[in-house]
Image (tube, rainbow, N blue to C red; front, side, top):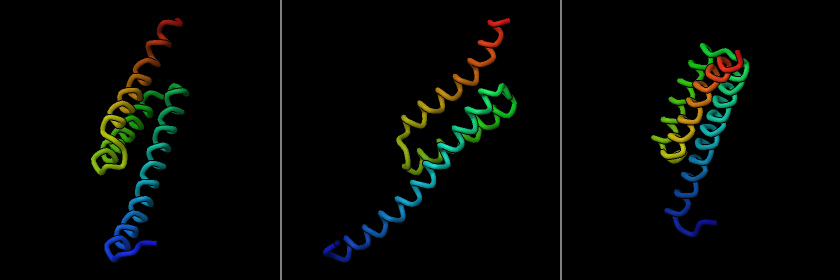
Length: 94
């Protein structure tokens, strides 16, 4: 239990931030999962749009401090590589 007024306020703020951060992180995971299923199924057009959505969400989360900027950058890079690697792998098989 908080002992002072300011500690009570900080506790309330922490609860609000926790709820917001949790929803943002859940949305990021959902967008990433959606993107990866589109890449795996070979729908590159829709995967490109999903990549833009995921990239935008990662940037916003990093800007608001939900995730570190470097993590957002790393995830964006790896997602883009997975989209670009898929057509190259298919071309090699033919």
